[in-house]
Image (cartoon, rainbow, N blue to C red; front, side, top):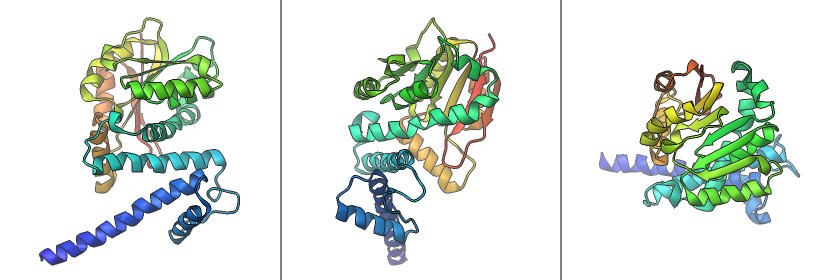
Length: 298
């Protein structure tokens, strides 16, 4: 029986090894910056998996910007998993700059999703964000990619990003300096648990999988208190209720990130307890985090 179990395990490892290298091939091909012979080999692997790339196009049917997003998404997963597999523990401070930047680029896609799909269900928030003096808080800003993306998507908005990791904030300042919207983005070292701001925000973004549980519970009332009357909070969190593998992966990722494990019901309870109204978990597409929103009634 032991021999059979080992054979099964070895077969599984081979399948997962192929998946890991296929993900790396996808990142390489989507970036379009590899050596010709390496890129050709990567495309061959992708073609064997059913993905083919046309001439002059990193991936079929995708523009350059979308290909870049795909590359970052694939690379971020590999970077993050390699730290866990390497036995070096898992904290964001142990990640390479490349890993931090890749994760930031993945997160930056949220800005467009908020504008396209969420604003229509959030009262007058679209008008608020289009008005001079609009302010947005990005908790756990990391490399600042999402903060910059929010400023680009909402031309009137001034964004404050907070984080506790100095190295990530250094990368964020580089991204801000390189952006045409950088004049409206500020980042600072700030623990969510100690956050305070008297000017007020029209919208706050809080990614629970990247915020430690003590900081989230201590800081959530502070973030809510910093919302302007009628302002909104968006909490991204793990999506549960899928397949056993999907739920287990969500749980592992969140714990590896050092973040907070909450499901839809727990997220709604947190926001209700913080005094928000119109609290609900909104539908999100497969692969996207769950999203729970609430409005400051004050």
